[in-house]
Image 1: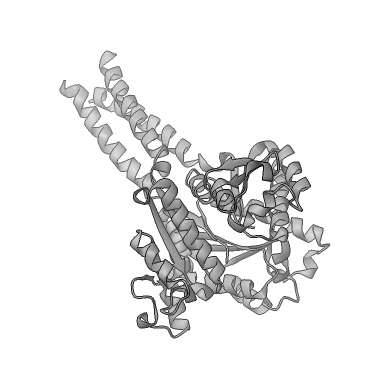
Image 2: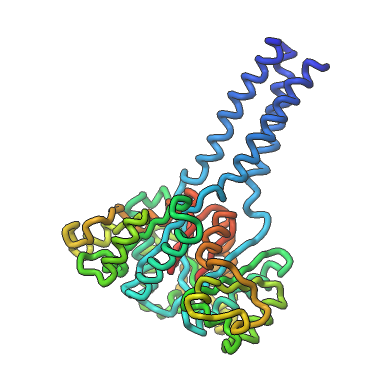
Length: 141
Length: 141
Length: 141
């Protein structure tokens, strides 16, 4: 009897160790994607403010932030964008900023039309979907 | 001693197999709910564009897309909707499109007032909440 | 041989019990955070309507609802807010309503400038991010 119980006790201990580690997985690191899909500089500034506030409150090293501009929001990342300087500041602070290549193709925009330091994704909306399904939070400013 | 260790080794192998299967569960299939709550045809077209782009990029067979119209957005799905043809195209392409029955009751709309092929949910906002808690991503165009 | 198999059978039964409990964890209780970040009373009313509809449909006891007002949305929770009475009704019905202290500092607002019964969070956007990563759904009315 004891021979059967000992392995079971060890097993129960292992399960007790493994399961809470799973349950606590989500909160360990802040990760958030932000959608910019409006042609509205006020929204662009809100997104940049939100990113900055998250970094200030949690520490830039403790959180992954990605701003995704697509559809009518793509203008935020054009070379002549009115928030170009602020986008560069966000990039320097470790925020990832990506432009949607689907939108760029539709609007006949090339990479030389865009702010020089931004990154690119094939489809902004797919990026927003997939990041959420990988555990990232979503904010639409 | 060996008799106790053998079952534990087998157990460790089983746990190693079970736990990663859990952790990898989310990314296996794209699933996204889209909220349409504005009385704004530009937003309706954005939602339909977003759905189409997701299907184009991932393959319609690889992703579940549901558009939920409620509140002021219910007009998107009325029989006389300016995007009626596009809604029918989305339905034919496998997008699920649902109208909120709470909103319809408030606005005294019956099913014969709506586009003939849409589906219905009791409460649009509850649908959006529950789908997210079941692992679907959320997009608000 | 039997001695090794018996503990394994018990183990398999335990894992079968533990793992589905994990997989089913999310849908057990409705939990939703709502973002109010527009200076637009129509949006404030939509958020309050959404909260009320969720409580009506699921039962107030079965769902946690939190409305987070920040940025230009902070005006919803000022003492003179045009939806002050409705906010009080939501609070009485068990909805949690919180104001962003970052925004209040930027706008030089003190707690005595706000509706008396609301709660506070350091940063509205961080609250929205963290709640989602803890399994709450997100609605932006």
